[in-house]
Amino acid sequence: MDTRLQQYDDKMKKTVEFLEKDYAGLRAGRANPHVLDKLRVDYYGTPTPIQQVGNVTVPEARIIQIAPWEKTMIREIEKAIQTSDIGINPSNDGSVIRLVFPELTEERRKDLAKDVKKKAEEAKVAVRNIRRDGNDAFKKLAKTEVSEDEIQQLEEELQKLTDKYIKDIDAAMDVKTKEIMTV
Image 1 (cartoon, rainbow, N blue to C red):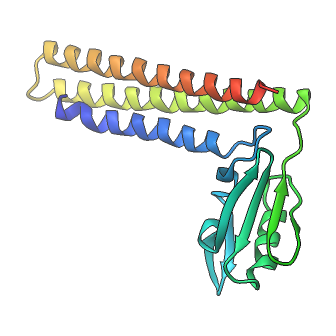
Image 2 (image 1 turned 135 degrees about the horizontal axis):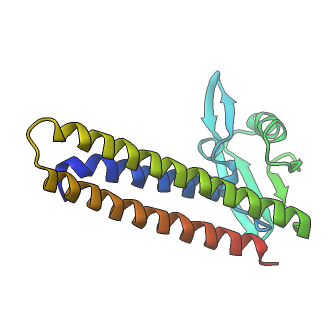
Image 3 (image 1 turned 120 degrees about the horizontal axis):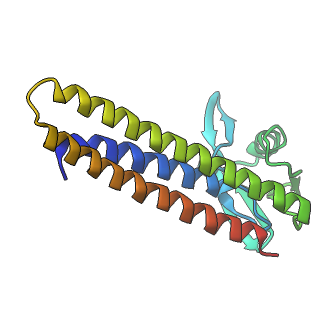
């Protein structure tokens, strides 16, 4: 791959990776420990991911269990979960915290599917903006040392990259939508 295209390929790849991480955090009927990824707990004055202060497991399809390594962290973890946008109330028995994920209603599934589509559209716009930036940069090159044919070749390659990443975004959206709509 041309070195002038590499930076745009990297940016597009990061856009798709960001979308997939975002999708991992979406709640879809089943317990997914990734919904906790964005949460931070106050651990001796330092915001720390929940996975670093306790053991996070999925003992059943709709339950996440968090066993803190220090019993004093139970209250902090509960507070972090309650103030987050997960929408689940934690319960604890003094040694572990459980998050029970209710079955999603049909209406909630449709809302989540719309959200998935919206996030995919935002990612596509980001990829197209990267393409635009690349094309603008290539046009500036035309004023200096690069031939018209070379510029056209670079633009075509950039369009192929764009098409590839748009397909990747569509595929990720389809997978997540199917996961959400499956009862």
